Amino acid sequence: MATRNRAFNRKGLELTHPNAAGIDIGSASHYVAVPADRDDEPVREFASFTADLHRLADWLRDCGVDTVAMKSTGVYWIPLFELLDARGFTVLLVNARHVKNVSGRKSDVLDCQWLQQLMTYGLLRGAFRPSDQVCVLRVLARQRATLLRTQSRSVQHMQKALVQMNIQLVNVIADVAGASGLASLRAIVAGERDPCALARLKNSRVHASDEEIARTLQGTWRAEHLFALRQALDAFDFCGGQLQQCDQEIEAKLQRLHITEIEPDKAKKRSKARNAPKFDLRTRLYQMCGVDLTRIDGIDVTTALVVVSETGTDMSKFPSDKHFASWLGLCPGTKITGGKVMSGKTKRCANRAAQALRLRLAAAALRTSQSALGTYYRRICSRMDKAKAVRAAAHKLARLIYSMLTKGEEYTDQGQAYYEERYRQRVLHNLNRRAQQLGMTLVPTAPASGAACLKNPLCVSYL
Image 1 (tube, rainbow, N blue to C red):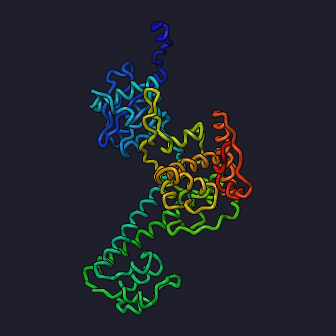
Image 2: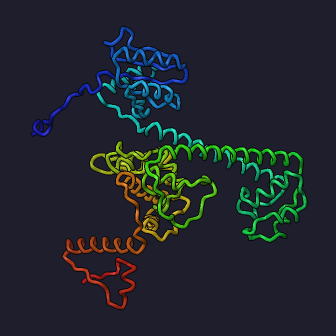
Image 3: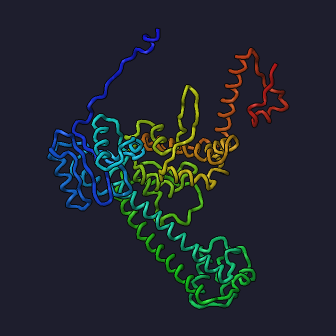
């Protein structure tokens, strides 16, 4: 009996890529391994200079290599990846975590040979990389995010200089980098010291009175702190100019990537983010994608830009929305042993598109939304901690984005009442099925409490 239970068809390893090569990426040099029968010296070291990279590609061509596997080491792989891809090689960028935990293989020579062997038998999978045109947009979007982070640090430096001079402007103005705050800071740097004159520069939307603002603008005015404030303000303005140039490049790139000239329907009335690009980003994204991603509650134009720049519009490399969500790192884990689920923790992932979805939700975009997604988010929050609820809602947003980009259909929100009714029917269906299993019957409560039953799907009783 034991022998019969063990009987199964063992399928040996097959050569799927006989012309594969492995490359161990380094900052100063790259180690390349080809099949042993292709060259007297199957492992060679090439410097990372451009001329040496061309010699590397020529050597691979002479050895009859058509598939190359390389580890994703920092950003050192990018020049070689782009060169080999332009020369017609099939290049797979491999996650370093998938091949690093092999005992005894710690040198560069053994690493490239191990990559070549694994690739030969088809045991490695390449990471997702969008088309070259989308990669250009991705670089611009990431550069824009870097500039925003740099500008935010300049704001912190301005706040520090104000506190050191005991200028308590942050206590009466919500945003020092807003119109009122910047007007006051520019006047201070220009030499204005009269608190009343500075208070009159406030915007009409500031609730604090002139007297309150004037009291906060009485400080020590030490020269060294004024110098730090001036430099921080100059750095803020410089980053602002860099952002304008970056936005112009992004707009020009989106114009080249457009697939339609049709403009989207009128958008929902939403508050515009201060850091959003000044041009009509929503229209440009619609003309590129063919659908309006901002119709989804919880996704604004900046979030849509990050997602599209990271993934592109071609979802053909993802067989289903589950594969797409898994690549984003938003799927529950499947750590199962002995038939028992040990952990459902989401895997660690530094995906920028997933971070944009989570951060937007973490800022309570759906917390007060009267939409179906808002209701779903609040229901999940009532069952688990906020971090898991944010991840679950981001998972749903990712599947909606995948569906829109693949089917080309616009998203239509059914509303809070529709979602609550569907949830009520689902709960009642499960209760009825459980009651039948126990030999019981569920009946609604008295008509007097019927209104309450509509709000509470559990308002039923047993007989």
